[in-house]
Amino acid sequence: MKRPKLKKASKRMTCHKRYKIQKKVREHHRKLRKEAKKRGHKKPKKDPGVPNSAPFKEALLREAELRKQQLEELKQQQKLDRQKEQERKRKLEISPDDEQSNVETQEESDEPKIKKAKSGKQNPKKLHCQELKKVIEASDIVLEVLDARDPLGCRCPQVEEAVIQSGCKKLVLVLNKSDLVPKENLENWLTYLNKELPTVVFKASTNLKNRKKTFKIKKKVVPFQSKLCCGKEALWKLLGGFQQSCGKGVQVGVVGFPNVGKSSIINSLKQERICSVGVSMGLTRSMQIVPLDKQITIIDSPCFIISPCNSPAALALRSPASIEVLRPLEAASAILSQADSQQVVLKYTVPGYKDSLDFFTKLAQRRGLHQKGGSPNVESAAKLLWSEWTGASLGYYCHPPASWNHSPHFNENITAIMKRGFNLEELEKNNAHSIQESFSGLRA
Image 1 (tube, rainbow, N blue to C red):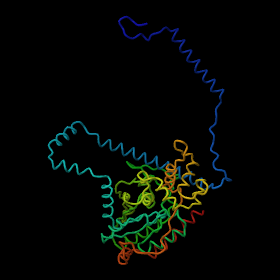
Image 2 (image 1 turned 45 degrees about the vertical axis):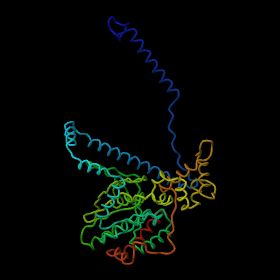
Image 3 (image 1 turned 60 degrees about the horizontal axis):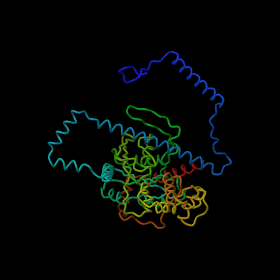
Image 4 (image 1 turned 90 degrees about the vertical axis):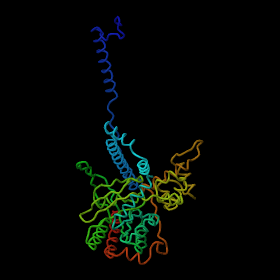
């Protein structure tokens, strides 16, 4: 009951009532334990895995491993983003005295200073290009990384022309992801590109399985196995030979379009996960200097920014982020035109298709992608195909042109200058060994 002149009632109670409540609680808990005992303990079901009799068992296991790897990379990237955000917030924390002094200095500043502060807030794309320009200016050798599935589509004439105009820099092509194309196609591309510039066949290591975590002060380094890396020895010998011919330390810049594997190549050479890698575009925002040894320093750079003036097909094949600003049907149709139709039919378990629209309709029906009213959602099916392509799950490759011609910004004199200082005979032998090693590993 409420005590006189007090708003709240007292919490005091008789011992009889308190003991009765405790007894009821004990009885309730005993009843719950008894019911749980009757239900029994259910063991968690174990995953039986893929049976040996299942068709395409190796492909299914490979896809499962790829999904697991992508999930780990996503978690690692999210962790790095959280750490960067926390560090940024710590830097923004200013004491009240400092805040007051900052306000006073801002009031005293004149108009020229205000204009300078406004000009400091530049466009992110402009800052991106400035970082790329810094990398090219600081480098003695520029490695242009190409995707072996579409080497000509990954070359940037503007960057190559900037390197040539510098006069004292070397340009080397790195044909990465060599395991995603047939051996004959890779050899044909190597012959085609070698006529113009020194070309190295490479396959970056992406095997992060069973990696051991080691910790250092204020820095976390995750070493990983580089058994699956091919072409590392060839690239090392090429850079080492050029450094010896120069007689001084050299700086090597790595440039290229998004998702060609720039950071993965640096991690493979260093045998440590120093640069962040992932399927998403633009993980590298600024130049990052990584010393390989006492004489050779490698510089990671942001990716090339694709001009929106290009065709939807070119944007789709060069920039994975462009799907958001393009019509997805055009972008995915460009990818589908380069893919092997038999492999696409087997992968997505759809019947034969006449054209891209027919394929997306059948894929939407197969995956249950429907719009209001039950009609198949072909745009969602196109986005699904695009996401498979960015993760290298869908196989496709381009053939080199039948006839070879110099690029507009190249001639015989420039080609000779670019090849000077490199041991091309040794590079040819090392490339042949890398191709043999890569495809023998795939057969095993």
